[in-house]
Length: 424
Ligand SMILES: *Cc1c(COP(=O)(O)O)cnc(C)c1O
Image (tube, rainbow, N blue to C red):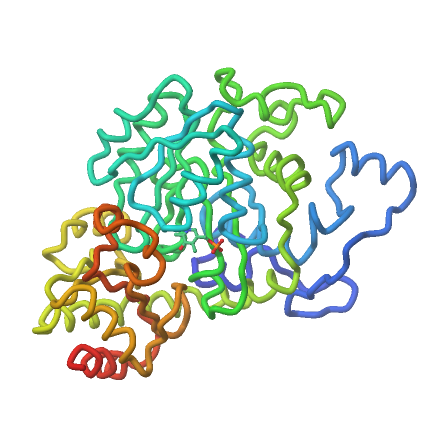
């Protein structure tokens, strides 16, 4: 299967006609549980000696197609689909961390991840150290003896910064720890972080993978290369597990150990299972991922060029623009385009930003990205309004900042709507 091109795999990877009915589209296996052949079969499933379905919190055949599809597109060895991007992140860190442990995360991250890492993770006694990833040396400086991982976004939300994955992977590996990359804004169509040395990829499939703004989902993709038993840093993977009769997950499952641990320990016990209906919606979205991403990025470039010349706009941060600070990294990591989410500054600050989002007609004013529809938000009056102005500026969400997620409508219509709103 993996000899096929990306566009073919986006439609076919993981899927086959249903063996019982011949159904060509992947059926929605809307069932909580699966009948055992007999007691021995049940025992082998519970002991992880055979692969099979027990209960949809842990495995489901519709979700399994989504897992194999995205793992194939990312070039990974195994995947796990869960209820949301945030739950994917929770399960990854639950597998990596012990109480008192640290990890290094990029300062340039989706706002929800900054809150999850900085606030809620503290309750597990997991601690984040932030690093400005415009210089990878900052990551090195932030790594200490209790650091268990480095976490970055390939294209950072919202600023559209392209991050130097290869340099940061090397720094992580020199310290004996894995690099986790959130590939939500790029999608595997624009960037494959595993091919640049990342060890695990996570997604909010809610965004471009699903692509239509109708279903939440998250993915964890295991690159299969990290040696979890090279040190005593990852006891969840390398040490005997009491809930499976002393089984060592890495010893037993080899290169797919991380994905297995996320499933049979973290997902089993924390429980953010993906509904099979949502898996079906995301799978349907992925079939057109290559077509949509090509159009998203083509439109985004046109909108960025238009905004750059607009008299009411003071700056545009889009890595596709030749004079952008991220342009050189974009050519290396996302050569097909810089994605469709970026920020720009409006002259007139806070009030002008509010006026713009109040004046759009075609564009939607809401807190999401990666929809077919074009979306705008003014972070300082919405997602970042709890922060002080100083904190807003540090997060790339100062009073003049507007974030756009360019959709796949006619570019001329998006431009016309922005133009009238900027003039308002
Ligand atoms: C939306 C988003 C998330 C969180 O995903 P949910 O599906 O909303 O839980 C994580 N990372 C990035 C980059 C996002 O855009």
